Length: 143
Image 1 (tube, helix red, strand yellow):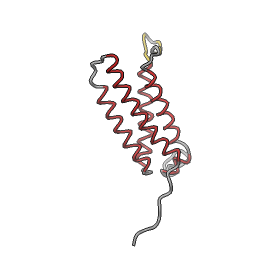
Image 2 (cartoon, one colour):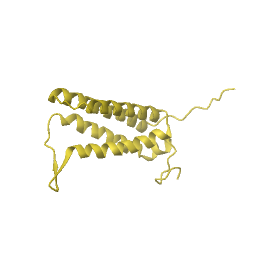
Image 3 (cartoon, one colour):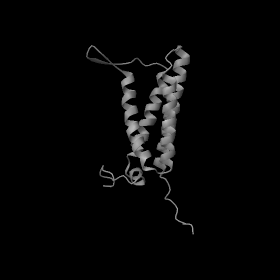
Image 4 (cartoon, one colour):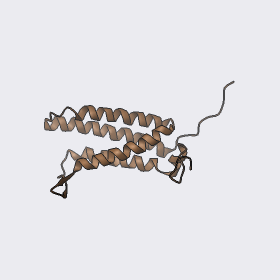
């Protein structure tokens, strides 16, 4: 006998967060291609790193759309890590003084990807999204 029980629908905030993870990774991949192609960079590490990030974001998005608890945790942790490391790429510390890199047209993709990632993290931290994954509203798992 099969169960007729259906899973509760995934909230729009979680679906949007999943889409933003993929959009963020696509923008980062596009940024790597544009930067390498437009500036003739010879750094071969950027494109594979961007491809790995795209794959990780796609896996997280897939897990979020299936309401997998591991996807929520991985999404929140990686979003925080990627935001911090991304911020470090645009901040330069020189002689104990903090400087922002000069804006350029190439940074548009980078900034857009940061906004997507930050919004995805905020959406995952909303009470409704946390309840979807069984994360307690007091900041503790199940609490």
